[in-house]
Amino acid sequence: MLKVDKISFSYGNTPCLEKISLNLEEGKIYGLLGENGVGKTTLLTLLSGLKNVQTGSIDVDGFTPYKRDPEFLSSVFYLPDEVTPVNTTAVSFAMEKGRFWPCFSLDEFKEIMQIFEMDLSQKMNAMSAGQLKKTWISFALACSTKYLFLDEPTNGLDIPSKAQFRKALMTYTCEDSTIVISTHQVKDLENIIDPIIILDKRDVLLNATVEEITSKLYFDYGTTLNPDSLYTEQLPGGFIQVYPNASGEESKLNVEALFNTVHKHKELIKGIFSHE
Image (cartoon, rainbow, N blue to C red; front, side, top):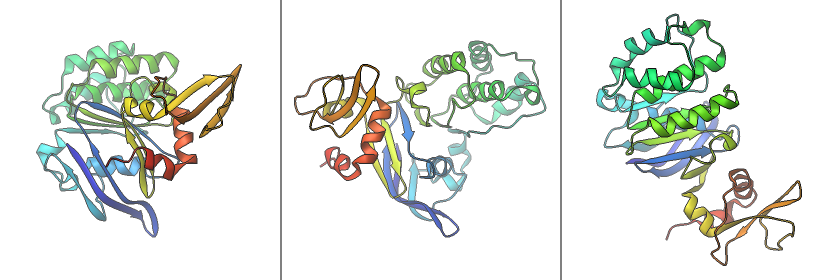
């Protein structure tokens, strides 16, 4: 279990996160959403122990991340948005660095690279940005860590590679792993992220499963506007609109519409999803 309790962090005099609290459970792939500048990347680096909270605390299975206990570090992998072009081949890099993670599998690394149609013998500093990203994703997944934090993993990937990423993620992650994916590319990951976290600088606006969200909000793809709509967007041939699910009907979640609804009605949504 990962517990974040009222953490705050600032860059100089500029607040980034203020008294943020949330719990992350095992066996979940969390989608971390938020506007630019709300602190998504900062939160991931705090969870990974790369930065230290200024107030509050983070507990990861009894470890404080910033203390960087070797046992904690071996259970965590953080993949930033921008990755390093190393002057070595992909397979040599994996063989050298993989020894720092006890569950790393070179065979799995090779299999994931094959999913991405990548050349193991290619030097990483001769790769395109997309190829380099796929190599680092392959390594991150092959480490088989209990906690995996991915910052904008589909940035720089072409359309086929995004499908390959989804396949690799679903195939090569452990059932008890906690995965947090920070992304603006919600359509790339809409069908695999669950629960969904929507972050604001001073609050977690939402931390709920897809089932919880669709039980309380109805996503209507129709031609008639509902007077109770919290959010409406015109589409070819009709509308996508979101309103309270008073009748308990099932609907298909639209993450972009959810995000816009939450930011338009922050306090209302927090009230709808508050846990007594």
